[in-house]
Image (tube, rainbow, N blue to C red):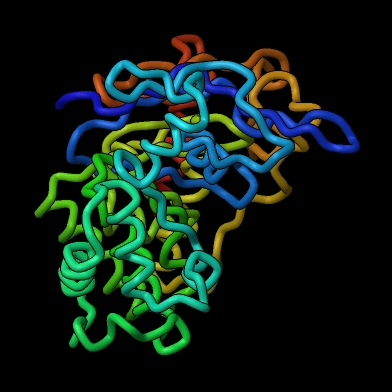
Length: 338
């Protein structure tokens, strides 16, 4: 597959009254054409800040301190804001978590879609309206022509999210970033939105970065998975590789909870403790203090990314050749649990 987006050694910091928070720490990954890459992890692990930094929509106290974000060999982290504003919406779009805060309550939904079309494509209002109606139909809004003039409060949460998706698709972007777009929705509507995004991806060939904390959602939508913890990607691979051959203890812990739910177990495994304070990131593996069976080196040195296969990598000392006994013990424990 062809690389569409390349993120290299990206670091994002936030200035606060207590010091500088290292929110994204030396992150590198590629997004391929036509794939859905899920970025998964607990709240506060850096998923949203990573993706907001790609399109340069960070809060005022946040900034990219290092790295590159390459789209068609253009480094988005270095270009001027007026050039970046032309790329947002046209080449890269983003769906935010809460559709009600993304929509203008004083403007009809149709006009909000048409406005994006006019700004980026310089066409007249009549053609923009027709395009908006087509997009509303594409995302499953029935009677779109009549509902064009309705306001956000006329729509349910799921329908509002469909409108937000229509806005994000208005200019046929190459990349769509979806920031937990189903979190506030009930299970039935969540499934509908996931099916809609998969259908749009298949029809258009758009590439999607899907942010979530839910491995159940990952199982439904992703082609590849990047697991984040404490501002870093600690494991990345094809969905099947992550689900069947997870290597990092954090990934294994997240998946144990999902497996317990699927088996209707009365006991739900949890990962004890909290993610570290990124004002002062810990030495070594940031997950070591929450790891049930850490290695001594986990507290001393940060692990590199070890190659498991051509598409599967994980940053854990368990993959070091000298850790074979520890790996074997974990495998035996997993088999006993399963």
